[in-house]
Image (cartoon, rainbow, N blue to C red; front, side, top):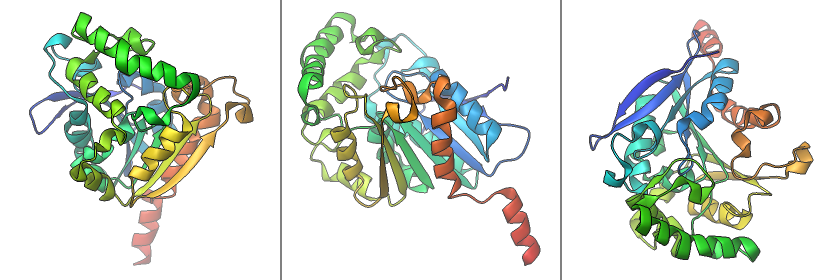
Length: 298
């Protein structure tokens, strides 16, 4: 089994972020950075990272946001992180680290990653991005019984849990990592605002609009509580100048019983799903062999 190399990323504001680099002995020109969902530790993406780095033309970097997993260096009640910093500092440093070492850097983001990606200054250096089950947080894009669940989360469950614990316990989202208090407060602010992460702030709108890269959005039919199709389409439109494409996956079409919000990265579905982002990124790369041939033609 391939072993990951542990890396410490040092952000501009002095926070150490835990990361892992998945690489084989053969040199690679390209790096895929995996940006997690809220409360999901990087280890969840380990098997995808191994798959991508072993079989194709990429090394893969995973990392934990500040206040999460191996990047939580103190008690969670002492953590003052907010969600915007996940993009502006943590993801930004992962992209900067990659860009300083590889010819091309790609990003695959899960869920909230699509909301904070434009906050990273180095997002503009990414060759292409691929978002799985990303969405606007704004509650107005939910309907039916999932809307009831989301309203209970924003108005009842999250405030009460924060009051009792001083942070959001992982069980409130069905398991996983706890979330620091300021992270959840900012997240709730986005959820209650009709424009979500944009907040009606032209500065944030400009962060999204400055990105002119190819971005592919994948929505999953049975992910109705966390990323319904309307919420995915809405955030896609936030990227006003990007070259966006959209894909709606119906599990039954792939003979999969259930995917939901987290199933895409399950190793049980690797043969049917994991080649999709790899093939999307591959169209934008040149291999070492192609570069060697080009040099010989000069």
